[in-house]
Length: 263
Image (cartoon, rainbow, N blue to C red):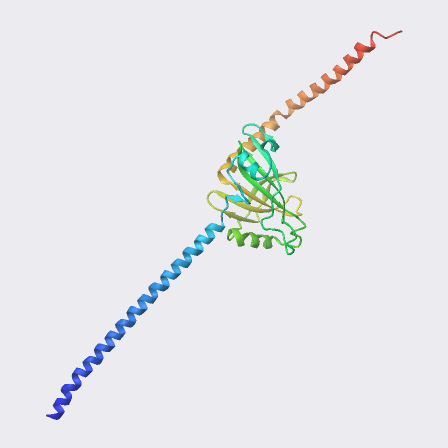
C-alpha cells in the first residue's frame, strides 16, 4: 500500500513539472517574438530616419539659396544683382539670358578654411525662368584634388553619385558645346553634373531643371541655326552700313571743300 501511494504521489508531481516546462517554453517563445517585433520596429524606425535624412540632404532643386525654376527677379535679388544686369544671349525663338553670380561661402570662413572653393557662378534663364546654374571651382582652392575627391565631397552632402557611361552635358564655351560627365546626381526633376572645365584647369558643377533645360536647349539649337542662316544677310547689312557711313563722311567733306576749291 505504501508503494502504491508513492506512485500515486509521483504521478501528479511529474505532471506539474511537464506543465511548468511547457509554460516556460511558451513564455520564452513569446519573449522571442516580442524581442523580434521590437528589433523590427527599431530597424524600420532607423531606416525611416535614414531615408528622411538622405531625402532632406539631397535637395537638388537649389544651390546656396538660389532655386532652379525661379524667376529672374527672384534669383537676381538673392544673387544681389539687378534683373537689368542679365546679358541677352538669344531673343528668338525664346529669350535666353545669363547673369553672373559670385556665391557667398557655404560655411563661414575660419582660420582652418582659407576661403570658398567656388570661383564664380553663372545663372541662365529661359523666358525669364532659371533653368541652369553653372558653378566653377577655384583652381587654386582645389589644387591637388582629384575628380574622385570632389565626387566624394559632393556625395557626402547630396548622396551617392552615378557615373553614366559616355554621358555628356551641354556646356557652351569657346572649347565646345558639350562636356563629358564625370559624375551625376539627379532626381526626377533636377540634375547635377560634375565636368572638367574646357581648359582642363578646374572643374564645374552644372545644375539644371530637366523640364526647363530641355526647352532651353531646343531653343538654343534653333537660335544657333537661325544665326547661321541669317549670317550672310547680317554681314551684307553691316557692310552696307559701313559703306553708307564712309559715303556720309565724304559727302560732308565735299560740301565743305567744293565752295573753296580754286583751280
